[in-house]
Image (cartoon, rainbow, N blue to C red; front, side, top):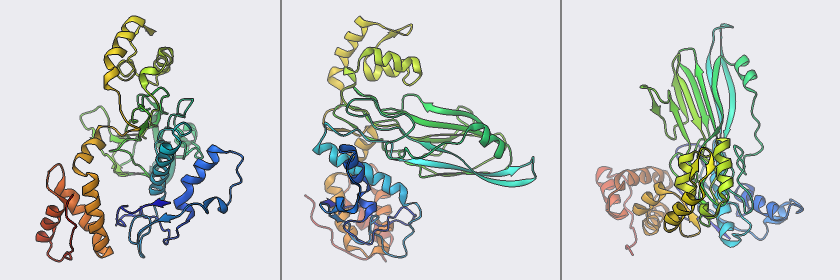
Length: 396
Protein backbone atom coordinates (compact mmCIF):
# COMPACT_ATOMS: atom_id res chain seq x y z
CA UNK A 1 0.00 0.00 0.00
CA UNK A 2 1.21 3.49 -0.90
CA UNK A 3 -0.27 5.94 1.60
CA UNK A 4 0.05 9.56 0.44
CA UNK A 5 -1.75 11.00 3.46
CA UNK A 6 0.11 14.17 4.39
CA UNK A 7 0.71 15.27 0.80
CA UNK A 8 0.40 18.99 0.16
CA UNK A 9 -3.04 20.49 -0.34
CA UNK A 10 -3.98 21.08 -3.96
CA UNK A 11 -2.07 24.05 -5.27
CA UNK A 12 -3.00 27.31 -6.89
CA UNK A 13 -0.38 26.53 -9.55
CA UNK A 14 -0.69 23.81 -12.19
CA UNK A 15 1.36 21.14 -10.39
CA UNK A 16 -1.69 19.12 -9.33
CA UNK A 17 -2.03 15.50 -10.51
CA UNK A 18 -5.57 14.58 -11.62
CA UNK A 19 -6.01 10.99 -10.39
CA UNK A 20 -9.68 11.18 -9.40
CA UNK A 21 -8.86 9.18 -6.29
CA UNK A 22 -8.31 5.99 -8.33
CA UNK A 23 -6.30 3.74 -5.96
CA UNK A 24 -4.43 2.19 -8.91
CA UNK A 25 -4.11 5.20 -11.17
CA UNK A 26 -1.29 4.72 -13.67
CA UNK A 27 0.27 8.12 -12.91
CA UNK A 28 0.60 7.19 -9.24
CA UNK A 29 2.25 3.86 -10.05
CA UNK A 30 4.66 4.80 -12.86
CA UNK A 31 7.54 4.62 -10.37
CA UNK A 32 6.50 1.08 -9.49
CA UNK A 33 6.61 0.11 -13.17
CA UNK A 34 10.13 1.55 -13.40
CA UNK A 35 11.28 -0.48 -10.40
CA UNK A 36 9.66 -3.75 -11.47
CA UNK A 37 11.04 -3.46 -14.99
CA UNK A 38 14.52 -2.77 -13.56
CA UNK A 39 14.35 -5.79 -11.27
CA UNK A 40 13.13 -7.99 -14.12
CA UNK A 41 13.64 -6.53 -17.62
CA UNK A 42 11.74 -9.50 -19.10
CA UNK A 43 8.55 -8.72 -17.19
CA UNK A 44 5.46 -8.21 -19.32
CA UNK A 45 4.26 -4.64 -18.80
CA UNK A 46 0.50 -4.66 -18.21
CA UNK A 47 -2.08 -3.30 -15.79
CA UNK A 48 -2.07 -6.56 -13.86
CA UNK A 49 1.23 -5.50 -12.32
CA UNK A 50 -0.60 -2.91 -10.24
CA UNK A 51 -3.05 -5.33 -8.62
CA UNK A 52 -0.90 -5.84 -5.50
CA UNK A 53 -0.70 -2.05 -5.01
CA UNK A 54 -3.29 0.29 -3.54
CA UNK A 55 -2.80 4.05 -3.24
CA UNK A 56 -4.42 6.29 -0.64
CA UNK A 57 -4.74 9.86 -1.94
CA UNK A 58 -6.90 12.11 0.28
CA UNK A 59 -9.33 14.34 -1.58
CA UNK A 60 -8.25 17.93 -2.16
CA UNK A 61 -4.54 17.18 -2.13
CA UNK A 62 -1.92 17.66 -4.82
CA UNK A 63 -2.31 13.99 -5.86
CA UNK A 64 -6.12 14.07 -5.89
CA UNK A 65 -7.29 17.64 -6.55
CA UNK A 66 -10.87 18.80 -6.81
CA UNK A 67 -12.17 20.51 -9.95
CA UNK A 68 -11.27 23.11 -11.20
CA UNK A 69 -7.65 22.66 -10.10
CA UNK A 70 -4.95 23.49 -12.68
CA UNK A 71 -3.02 20.40 -13.79
CA UNK A 72 -0.95 21.46 -16.82
CA UNK A 73 2.44 20.97 -15.11
CA UNK A 74 1.65 17.71 -13.34
CA UNK A 75 4.71 16.04 -14.89
CA UNK A 76 7.02 17.73 -12.37
CA UNK A 77 4.97 16.43 -9.43
CA UNK A 78 5.00 13.00 -11.07
CA UNK A 79 8.81 13.16 -11.23
CA UNK A 80 8.95 13.89 -7.52
CA UNK A 81 6.48 11.07 -6.91
CA UNK A 82 8.73 8.65 -8.78
CA UNK A 83 11.66 9.62 -6.57
CA UNK A 84 9.52 8.99 -3.47
CA UNK A 85 8.73 5.48 -4.73
CA UNK A 86 12.38 4.84 -5.59
CA UNK A 87 13.26 5.84 -2.03
CA UNK A 88 10.69 3.47 -0.55
CA UNK A 89 12.01 0.53 -2.58
CA UNK A 90 15.57 1.58 -1.73
CA UNK A 91 14.86 0.88 1.93
CA UNK A 92 13.30 -2.50 1.12
CA UNK A 93 15.92 -3.75 -1.36
CA UNK A 94 18.94 -1.47 -0.89
CA UNK A 95 21.27 -3.84 -2.71
CA UNK A 96 19.29 -3.41 -5.95
CA UNK A 97 18.31 0.25 -6.00
CA UNK A 98 20.18 3.42 -7.10
CA UNK A 99 20.35 6.76 -5.35
CA UNK A 100 17.95 9.52 -6.36
CA UNK A 101 17.94 10.84 -9.92
CA UNK A 102 17.70 14.59 -10.43
CA UNK A 103 13.96 14.15 -10.95
CA UNK A 104 13.52 17.15 -13.20
CA UNK A 105 13.94 17.89 -16.89
CA UNK A 106 13.15 21.38 -18.05
CA UNK A 107 12.54 22.37 -21.65
CA UNK A 108 14.03 25.78 -22.42
CA UNK A 109 11.81 27.92 -24.66
CA UNK A 110 12.75 31.32 -26.09
CA UNK A 111 10.55 34.03 -27.56
CA UNK A 112 12.60 36.78 -29.19
CA UNK A 113 12.81 39.04 -32.25
CA UNK A 114 14.63 37.65 -35.27
CA UNK A 115 15.97 40.84 -36.85
CA UNK A 116 17.36 38.85 -39.77
CA UNK A 117 13.85 37.95 -40.90
CA UNK A 118 11.92 40.80 -39.33
CA UNK A 119 9.61 38.64 -37.25
CA UNK A 120 9.29 37.21 -33.77
CA UNK A 121 10.35 33.61 -33.09
CA UNK A 122 9.24 31.12 -30.47
CA UNK A 123 11.55 28.14 -30.20
CA UNK A 124 12.22 25.16 -27.95
CA UNK A 125 15.98 25.40 -27.53
CA UNK A 126 16.99 22.27 -25.63
CA UNK A 127 16.12 20.08 -22.67
CA UNK A 128 18.28 20.57 -19.58
CA UNK A 129 18.21 17.16 -17.91
CA UNK A 130 19.69 16.17 -14.57
CA UNK A 131 22.00 13.32 -13.67
CA UNK A 132 21.02 9.76 -12.86
CA UNK A 133 21.46 8.39 -9.36
CA UNK A 134 24.50 6.23 -8.67
CA UNK A 135 23.80 2.55 -9.36
CA UNK A 136 24.68 -0.47 -7.19
CA UNK A 137 27.68 -1.29 -9.40
CA UNK A 138 28.44 1.80 -11.47
CA UNK A 139 28.28 5.59 -11.59
CA UNK A 140 25.06 7.37 -12.44
CA UNK A 141 24.41 8.46 -16.02
CA UNK A 142 25.62 11.95 -16.83
CA UNK A 143 23.06 14.44 -18.13
CA UNK A 144 20.34 11.83 -18.55
CA UNK A 145 18.42 11.11 -15.38
CA UNK A 146 16.96 7.64 -14.94
CA UNK A 147 13.40 8.91 -15.36
CA UNK A 148 14.11 11.38 -18.19
CA UNK A 149 16.35 9.47 -20.58
CA UNK A 150 13.86 9.66 -23.43
CA UNK A 151 14.55 13.34 -24.23
CA UNK A 152 16.87 14.27 -27.10
CA UNK A 153 18.78 17.47 -27.64
CA UNK A 154 18.97 19.69 -30.70
CA UNK A 155 22.38 20.32 -32.30
CA UNK A 156 23.66 23.76 -31.39
CA UNK A 157 24.17 24.70 -35.02
CA UNK A 158 20.50 24.02 -35.80
CA UNK A 159 19.34 26.00 -32.80
CA UNK A 160 21.45 29.05 -33.70
CA UNK A 161 20.26 28.96 -37.32
CA UNK A 162 16.60 28.82 -36.34
CA UNK A 163 16.71 31.05 -33.24
CA UNK A 164 18.62 34.35 -32.95
CA UNK A 165 20.60 33.41 -29.84
CA UNK A 166 24.25 32.49 -29.25
CA UNK A 167 24.89 29.37 -27.19
CA UNK A 168 28.08 29.99 -25.24
CA UNK A 169 28.15 26.77 -23.22
CA UNK A 170 26.43 23.41 -23.40
CA UNK A 171 27.71 20.37 -21.56
CA UNK A 172 28.08 18.81 -18.13
CA UNK A 173 28.29 20.78 -14.87
CA UNK A 174 31.30 19.77 -12.74
CA UNK A 175 30.84 18.80 -9.08
CA UNK A 176 27.09 18.27 -9.36
CA UNK A 177 27.06 14.47 -9.01
CA UNK A 178 26.71 13.28 -5.43
CA UNK A 179 29.93 11.87 -4.00
CA UNK A 180 29.99 8.15 -3.24
CA UNK A 181 31.68 4.82 -3.80
CA UNK A 182 29.70 5.20 -7.00
CA UNK A 183 29.33 8.82 -8.11
CA UNK A 184 26.00 10.35 -9.07
CA UNK A 185 25.54 11.51 -12.66
CA UNK A 186 26.44 15.07 -13.56
CA UNK A 187 23.91 17.76 -14.37
CA UNK A 188 23.50 19.41 -17.77
CA UNK A 189 24.37 23.09 -18.12
CA UNK A 190 23.31 25.54 -20.84
CA UNK A 191 24.35 29.18 -21.32
CA UNK A 192 23.13 31.42 -24.13
CA UNK A 193 23.09 35.10 -25.08
CA UNK A 194 20.14 37.03 -26.55
CA UNK A 195 20.33 40.07 -28.81
CA UNK A 196 16.83 41.59 -28.90
CA UNK A 197 14.97 43.58 -26.24
CA UNK A 198 12.40 41.87 -24.03
CA UNK A 199 13.41 38.34 -24.99
CA UNK A 200 11.30 35.96 -22.95
CA UNK A 201 12.60 32.64 -21.67
CA UNK A 202 10.75 29.86 -19.91
CA UNK A 203 12.33 26.76 -18.40
CA UNK A 204 9.30 24.76 -17.33
CA UNK A 205 9.69 21.78 -15.02
CA UNK A 206 12.65 23.26 -13.14
CA UNK A 207 13.09 21.94 -9.62
CA UNK A 208 15.67 20.91 -7.02
CA UNK A 209 16.96 24.43 -6.49
CA UNK A 210 16.49 24.09 -2.71
CA UNK A 211 16.45 20.40 -1.74
CA UNK A 212 18.99 18.03 -3.24
CA UNK A 213 18.49 14.58 -4.77
CA UNK A 214 19.36 12.19 -1.96
CA UNK A 215 22.34 9.93 -1.65
CA UNK A 216 22.15 6.46 -0.11
CA UNK A 217 24.20 4.05 2.01
CA UNK A 218 26.82 6.67 2.85
CA UNK A 219 26.69 8.43 -0.49
CA UNK A 220 26.12 12.18 -0.49
CA UNK A 221 23.29 14.25 -1.92
CA UNK A 222 23.78 15.78 -5.35
CA UNK A 223 24.30 19.39 -6.40
CA UNK A 224 21.35 21.77 -6.69
CA UNK A 225 19.93 23.24 -9.87
CA UNK A 226 20.12 26.96 -10.62
CA UNK A 227 19.17 29.63 -13.13
CA UNK A 228 21.29 32.79 -13.29
CA UNK A 229 21.17 35.93 -15.42
CA UNK A 230 24.62 37.30 -16.38
CA UNK A 231 26.68 34.97 -14.14
CA UNK A 232 30.01 36.29 -12.89
CA UNK A 233 29.23 39.93 -13.69
CA UNK A 234 28.09 42.97 -11.72
CA UNK A 235 24.62 42.37 -13.15
CA UNK A 236 24.40 38.78 -11.88
CA UNK A 237 20.95 37.77 -10.70
CA UNK A 238 20.11 34.35 -9.27
CA UNK A 239 16.55 33.28 -10.02
CA UNK A 240 16.35 30.21 -7.78
CA UNK A 241 13.36 28.07 -8.72
CA UNK A 242 11.75 30.70 -10.95
CA UNK A 243 11.09 29.25 -14.40
CA UNK A 244 10.46 32.45 -16.41
CA UNK A 245 12.50 35.57 -17.04
CA UNK A 246 12.81 38.48 -19.49
CA UNK A 247 16.25 39.21 -20.94
CA UNK A 248 17.61 42.34 -22.57
CA UNK A 249 20.16 42.71 -25.41
CA UNK A 250 23.48 41.10 -24.48
CA UNK A 251 22.14 39.29 -21.42
CA UNK A 252 23.38 35.75 -20.83
CA UNK A 253 21.22 33.14 -19.15
CA UNK A 254 22.83 30.22 -17.35
CA UNK A 255 20.76 27.15 -16.48
CA UNK A 256 21.90 23.91 -14.93
CA UNK A 257 19.90 21.02 -13.57
CA UNK A 258 20.52 19.00 -10.44
CA UNK A 259 22.86 16.04 -10.40
CA UNK A 260 22.17 12.48 -9.25
CA UNK A 261 22.75 11.28 -5.71
CA UNK A 262 25.83 9.28 -4.72
CA UNK A 263 25.79 5.70 -3.42
CA UNK A 264 28.14 4.20 -0.85
CA UNK A 265 30.96 5.73 1.17
CA UNK A 266 32.96 8.14 -1.05
CA UNK A 267 36.13 7.29 0.89
CA UNK A 268 35.88 3.78 -0.56
CA UNK A 269 36.03 5.00 -4.17
CA UNK A 270 39.29 3.99 -5.77
CA UNK A 271 41.66 6.98 -5.93
CA UNK A 272 42.36 6.25 -9.60
CA UNK A 273 38.67 6.68 -10.39
CA UNK A 274 38.66 10.05 -8.63
CA UNK A 275 41.81 11.12 -10.51
CA UNK A 276 40.12 10.07 -13.75
CA UNK A 277 37.03 12.14 -12.86
CA UNK A 278 39.26 15.16 -12.26
CA UNK A 279 41.09 14.65 -15.55
CA UNK A 280 37.75 14.48 -17.39
CA UNK A 281 36.48 17.64 -15.71
CA UNK A 282 33.71 15.83 -13.84
CA UNK A 283 35.11 16.61 -10.38
CA UNK A 284 37.33 19.52 -9.33
CA UNK A 285 40.58 18.90 -7.48
CA UNK A 286 39.08 20.71 -4.49
CA UNK A 287 36.04 18.43 -4.44
CA UNK A 288 38.29 15.39 -4.85
CA UNK A 289 40.00 16.29 -1.58
CA UNK A 290 36.89 17.54 0.24
CA UNK A 291 34.46 14.77 -0.71
CA UNK A 292 36.67 11.79 -1.54
CA UNK A 293 39.79 12.47 0.52
CA UNK A 294 41.96 12.12 -2.58
CA UNK A 295 44.96 14.43 -2.84
CA UNK A 296 46.32 15.06 -6.34
CA UNK A 297 49.68 16.49 -7.28
CA UNK A 298 50.04 17.45 -10.94
CA UNK A 299 47.09 15.17 -11.67
CA UNK A 300 48.62 12.14 -9.97
CA UNK A 301 47.38 10.60 -6.71
CA UNK A 302 49.55 11.38 -3.67
CA UNK A 303 49.12 8.04 -1.91
CA UNK A 304 50.50 9.06 1.48
CA UNK A 305 48.55 12.33 1.65
CA UNK A 306 45.38 10.55 0.49
CA UNK A 307 45.68 7.88 3.20
CA UNK A 308 46.14 10.54 5.86
CA UNK A 309 43.27 12.71 4.64
CA UNK A 310 40.86 9.78 4.38
CA UNK A 311 41.65 8.79 7.96
CA UNK A 312 40.88 12.36 9.01
CA UNK A 313 37.57 12.43 7.12
CA UNK A 314 36.39 8.97 8.19
CA UNK A 315 34.41 10.23 11.20
CA UNK A 316 32.54 12.88 9.18
CA UNK A 317 30.73 10.75 6.61
CA UNK A 318 26.91 10.65 6.31
CA UNK A 319 25.18 8.17 8.61
CA UNK A 320 21.89 6.41 7.96
CA UNK A 321 20.31 5.17 4.76
CA UNK A 322 19.73 8.59 3.16
CA UNK A 323 21.73 11.79 2.93
CA UNK A 324 19.58 14.81 2.06
CA UNK A 325 22.04 17.68 2.44
CA UNK A 326 22.25 20.67 4.81
CA UNK A 327 19.29 22.54 3.31
CA UNK A 328 16.80 19.85 4.22
CA UNK A 329 18.40 19.30 7.63
CA UNK A 330 17.80 22.98 8.37
CA UNK A 331 14.23 22.80 7.08
CA UNK A 332 13.36 19.74 9.14
CA UNK A 333 14.71 21.35 12.30
CA UNK A 334 11.58 23.53 12.09
CA UNK A 335 9.21 21.31 10.13
CA UNK A 336 9.56 18.18 12.21
CA UNK A 337 7.45 15.06 11.71
CA UNK A 338 5.24 16.26 14.58
CA UNK A 339 4.78 19.70 13.02
CA UNK A 340 3.92 18.18 9.65
CA UNK A 341 1.47 15.85 11.38
CA UNK A 342 -0.31 18.84 12.91
CA UNK A 343 -0.41 20.65 9.58
CA UNK A 344 -1.78 17.54 7.87
CA UNK A 345 -4.61 17.37 10.40
CA UNK A 346 -5.29 21.07 9.97
CA UNK A 347 -5.37 20.80 6.17
CA UNK A 348 -7.84 17.91 6.36
CA UNK A 349 -10.27 19.91 8.50
CA UNK A 350 -10.16 23.10 6.43
CA UNK A 351 -12.35 23.54 3.33
CA UNK A 352 -10.32 22.69 0.21
CA UNK A 353 -10.23 26.25 -1.15
CA UNK A 354 -8.62 27.51 2.09
CA UNK A 355 -5.86 24.92 2.40
CA UNK A 356 -3.15 26.21 0.09
CA UNK A 357 -3.61 29.77 1.34
CA UNK A 358 -3.34 28.74 4.99
CA UNK A 359 -0.35 26.49 4.35
CA UNK A 360 1.50 29.33 2.60
CA UNK A 361 0.79 31.63 5.56
CA UNK A 362 1.99 28.98 8.03
CA UNK A 363 5.27 28.54 6.17
CA UNK A 364 5.81 32.30 6.12
CA UNK A 365 5.19 32.61 9.85
CA UNK A 366 7.17 29.65 11.11
CA UNK A 367 10.30 30.31 9.06
CA UNK A 368 13.19 29.55 11.39
CA UNK A 369 11.19 30.27 14.56
CA UNK A 370 10.51 27.82 17.37
CA UNK A 371 6.76 28.43 17.62
CA UNK A 372 4.27 25.64 16.99
CA UNK A 373 1.89 25.11 14.10
CA UNK A 374 -0.97 25.88 16.47
CA UNK A 375 0.53 29.24 17.42
CA UNK A 376 1.21 30.11 13.79
CA UNK A 377 -2.37 29.18 12.85
CA UNK A 378 -3.71 31.47 15.57
CA UNK A 379 -1.63 34.29 14.08
CA UNK A 380 -3.09 33.56 10.65
CA UNK A 381 -6.63 33.74 12.03
CA UNK A 382 -5.84 36.97 13.86
CA UNK A 383 -4.71 38.49 10.56
CA UNK A 384 -7.47 36.86 8.48
CA UNK A 385 -10.56 36.34 10.70
CA UNK A 386 -12.37 34.84 7.72
CA UNK A 387 -10.23 31.68 7.98
CA UNK A 388 -12.47 28.91 9.39
CA UNK A 389 -11.76 28.08 13.03
CA UNK A 390 -10.71 24.44 13.29
CA UNK A 391 -9.12 22.46 16.09
CA UNK A 392 -5.54 21.28 15.89
CA UNK A 393 -4.70 18.22 17.98
CA UNK A 394 -2.53 18.48 21.07
CA UNK A 395 1.19 18.55 20.50
CA UNK A 396 3.12 15.44 21.34
